[in-house]
Length: 218
Image (cartoon, rainbow, N blue to C red; front, top):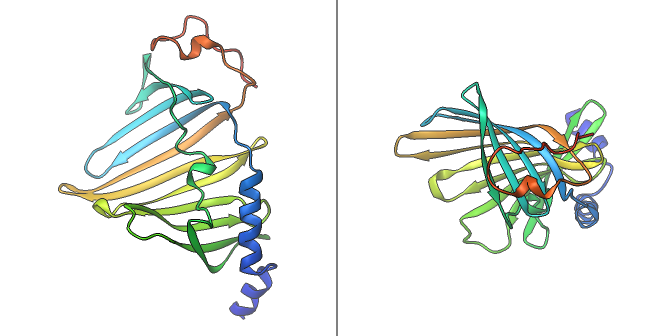
């Protein structure tokens, strides 16, 4: 019975799913201007909670630490970065079939929605970092989740994506690794994505609170 349900959930052959995934990635446009709030939680060898607000335009980034361990800062700590790629963009994290072999692991059903899970293996061995799994959304054929592993400290983690407004963006990430003092855990949650058409140049000026706040966000 389980086999029949699984077979019914697979409307496409695995090769066709991977082809649609590759085409969806090639067509995907990612936002160049955005504001996002994220929380950072660390546990295990270190306990820390932070809330950040990030403004990005192209590769320019303004990172404001607005709360630490539950206490909201009256004066946010501000850091300005130039030419800094966004690490949690889909194109930065989606395994590429040109670099990985895809092996179908089965469908994943949530009500009527079906995703497709693939194990992925690097075509070139020996890297310190590699993706291990990708879950492909059954509607958009974009990645809804990716898993990875690192050789150093036995690190493992996951990144999750979701559609927000008209964009496909990260909604969260988690990772763990072993060290001399035990196992460290880290979790990110992206909780408020905004997509203004532009940000004033002063956003990426001197690393201090803005005298004039950015324009109201939609």
